[in-house]
Length: 569
Image (cartoon, rainbow, N blue to C red; front, side, top):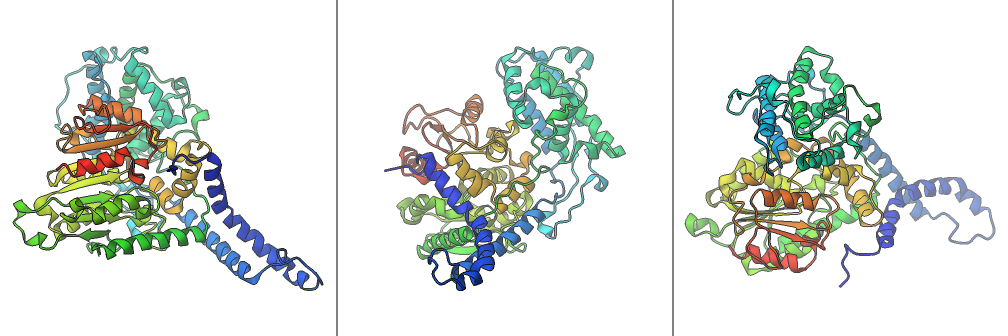
């Protein structure tokens, strides 16, 4: 059987070009019809294929009108949103964990102390972001807005007894493999430039975005902003210590348009035809109706307008059983693409298998990342607080809060899974993460590969056109992607070292995330890796010949291993 992930490049190119060409064709055909229709009526003989047809003109006019509306919505999507709101400890925890990531490889004590000293200086500022520093949002939708203030302080408020004049003289050496490793991956955020091209203020510019979601010059124009800039200096020292190198003073203008700052950069949107949305929405609706015919019911959270939609099916009498005798519910969170359509094989298993029919099954529906243009939620991605309120309501309504549940997230769905793991770890009994983009987000591979890098011909170009530059998905990634909240640290997963409780699948030929980096991070953190097919001793399985998404889409050995793991509870 031919894999859809291994077709010749020309097939992907033909499919992408054919769909893309519909929009420019519609403009050309409308102009052609208006200019030459009456002229051809005066000619005695004209080939039928040259004469404009009213039906084709009607369709072309519809596509043309839709493209204008699409462009208008794309321009609205460019508007900046207010900064994300975080618990006081979150950013500090992220910075500390990122700075110490990888240092357990024979780390000199003095280098760790230098990192601790700089972090303690950052904590001492105890910052809060006033409203005057928050960019105003002109978005017409209130759901696009979130609170703009947060503070950063020490988790335990202790003052580390390290002196800068001693400890900052002991950074990692320039040749230290850990310093080389950090430099090689930090440059991804700067367009894969050379390390010596990153100057002091370029790094501050990037740090200003990571901490505040704002431009460096916005911080530099107010007293409050100056305070924030002072707090960033120790953080910059952390990176210098880890890199074994000092940044040259000043600002390198050659990097002005290269640094990746996801929520500040322009959204890259490509025109998509109405016909594509009609096809994907009809197929998605058909798959949903098929699931409903197999016993699922569509439900919606009501704590807010446009609340979370999900499909739910329970075995008869499950709610009436004693809690300790109930089978564990299962929650599935899909990734970017065309929604449920791309998961038909897995959905068929959830519909018909004995294992699935013996327990409640919940499937989250996410129109904002599913090409669901005609859904009111298409451009209204829920924030983490909104999603957690929805999930709390859904779990309570379905009585999952009484038993806990099993969780499976794929690709972007692993970030929603990360939110659940952080918010309600006691309820999550087993976790499976497939193509997990939630790990190692601080290294920039996901953002660069999926949104910024020039896609290679073939499958990568298909992904870029149909997924990454689609209006709803592009807006979600560029305006609603909260990197600090989306990061999952493996030790936050309950029982992550138990292969029966935690399972991670990586695709060796993944073009979105960096499977080798994530593999190293997980194994260094204590997760055992399986050494052969159907090995059950480890929680990590790397499918070396698979692409991103292939594990879930095709009926290969990895899919069978997934099913075996699910049924082993």
